[in-house]
Image (cartoon, rainbow, N blue to C red):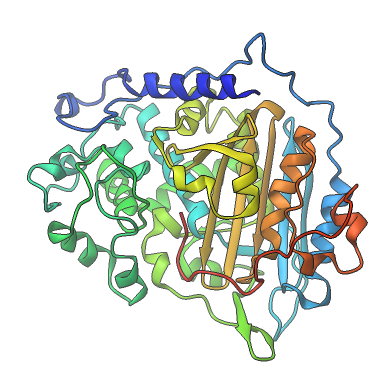
Length: 450
């Protein structure tokens, strides 16, 4: 899909966001008083334009090569373990584990080994909210204070203007990652939400983007107030169970109760050191609380590529994936971002990218000792997710490598040279000369990234 097609989809999403959805309950029917995007309705699925390049559906997706790369990533202890799922045209092409769960008590990672998802959890929050909107129990422009009347912000009347869509698209008006450091310092979620009454604000709700974890998780309070069930219980009932995500859970207790789970790893003097998971970000369940196996995530990809309309119907998916706000900083950073991304935005629990003229939905996640990334390529009916149990950056280049292959794009060498070793031909098909050095394998953050 060329740039014009992406702009068309972007514009369609923005226009749809200004139109009314089906009416909710009577006490939520008043018009919002602020925000650049106040109402959402299911956006039509973007169609290819007559002059758009034909979809590369005939491109050979080299699954054996991708699996061999994953094997190379865990070889010689480069990373302890990882798992990868690739789905296309409603079929699971690959769902495998690689490496080990724990350097101190090693077991092989398999398709049912549970990983911590960190910020990949945000896509579940968007979907759970959307299901309630479809049920007529919520509106995208419902106000937070209708469900949490005590909530306050420092800007006059700002709290009353904050909507469900603002929360899920990081347009709360708060500064970037507000109170994340306090959360890492063991503060309780609801104590932090009360402190937002005195927090500095960058803008009014709905007017600007700033990534959040604590404020994002207010969506859990809305789900509880709407359904009478705890957020994690409702996600399990409405998403995990019907999709057959049988290994999925929420929280520290959930991962520890798993039949097999991958321990988090950090760098030590002698190599990788396994730890117990930190509980802090589990306290913000909508933002970072899900645990799941790669088998579970294959089902999640199938649902988000439109093959489980009984759980996530196509109009809802179009709304969840429609970008609502620009996030230009996403086009910087890693080499694949600088080279491939020409535009970036945030939707409802997903990032929306223009990837060399093609629409790609994406999200990454990180907490201490875990990393993950997932992407959807709608024109190819393709979904990819990669999870790993260490703070290494090495696997990060595998996802854009797969996207490049699917789209027939050449010239990208996104995998770190530490992985290449004696496998140059495997990792960089058709490469000429040496590739530049990649990111440090020890780089990592202690909190879920944007």
